[in-house]
Amino acid sequence: MKSSLVIMAAGIGSRFGGGIKQLEPVGRQGEIIMDYSIHDAIEAGFNKIVFIIRKDIEDAFKDAIGNRIEKICSALGVETAYAYQSLDALPDGVQLPAGRTKPWGTGQAVLSCKGIVNEPFVVINADDYYGKEAFVKIRSFLKGYDPASPEKLCMAGFVLKNTLSDNGGVTRGICRMDADGYLTDVDETSNIVKTVKDGVIGAEVDGKEVDADSLVSMNMWGLTPEFIDVLEKGFAEFFDGIEPGTEKELKAEYLLPIYIDSLLKAGKVSVKVLETGDKWFGVTYKEDKQIVVDSFAKLIDDGVYKEDLFSDLLTD
Image (cartoon, rainbow, N blue to C red):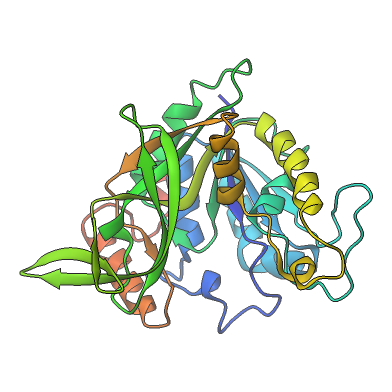
């Protein structure tokens, strides 16, 4: 079955090198976090990789990442493609506000895949490490895709304590589910701080304990091709709620989890939460980088990955 990995990378700056967290080397041979996600998706059976970028970083992106990944994917029979997120890609009748420089958000990013992604897909952030299990579970869910039921979506649910930083508070979408494991609500919670008492990892918000075993959303969704058309309709509706000439017009974002939540509450989609026990890595704080580097080193030492990352796939 054709299925795509869609990587939201349009937020990468035009200046490559120091300071761009998505391009910070974390592997022993200079691999970046994105490399590990691509490896795990291909290993799980995804056979198309789509990078969402901006036109102004296309050449630099291909030099730093794309050309190398295209070569690896070609050897593995995996297709690669590019989608371009643009500030002026707006619904009919909507003008780009003067002074708007902020991207329109993750919802518009995925919408940029219209006409490029025509198969079930998983969408991820470029700078997050999700682990192998989530890709396997989402791929398995998407294998049951039925064009007659395009509203059936899924998401990876990470255990909160596996997503916390040692270096400060984080924001996480804490999931509520029904008895069958379907998402009912996402509670966006800020400043969740990791605690350790008697060797047990916990979580607190403003001194109040939060269930560290709760499942949280890390923006890893399993979606259907028809959902892109739904996103297009939602993007037009997004502008209905924005008064021209206001500050909101300059800063509002069309965010994927918020829009999915609104569809959920309207009964227009179902979202199966697929629990994963893998540890999420990301560089939220500058001090997180060494922890991520050490974590990947341990995964290599434990045999989860080869030191030459893609060598296991290329020799299978």
